[in-house]
Length: 110
Image (cartoon, rainbow, N blue to C red; front, side, top):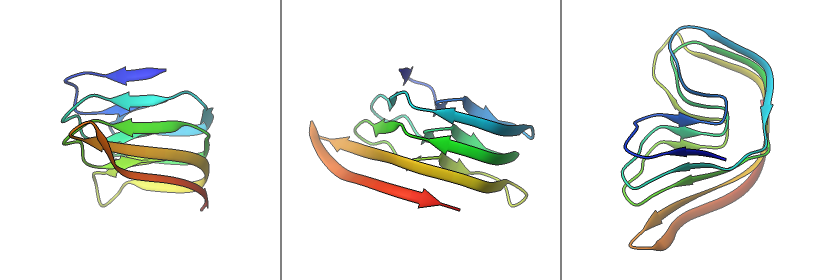
């Protein structure tokens, strides 16, 4: 389980990829951001670099007021950021007032 409390970036592999490369990895753990935590992703919370050949089977959860929550990447922060050859069989939830605001289970292949 990966948990972020008062951080702005939470990810199963990296909270923030700051221009580096993440390749050939997967995450099956639950990734949780507490209230008002942004940029929450199954692989990377905020990507400013390159992400190739990744697989996410995680549950990604954002707390009340959280934005940019994604199965693979919460936020692609840069016009030069790359996200290729990924697969997700994940779910995500966003909570507000202790109720689930958004919930989705999905399979993605890109």
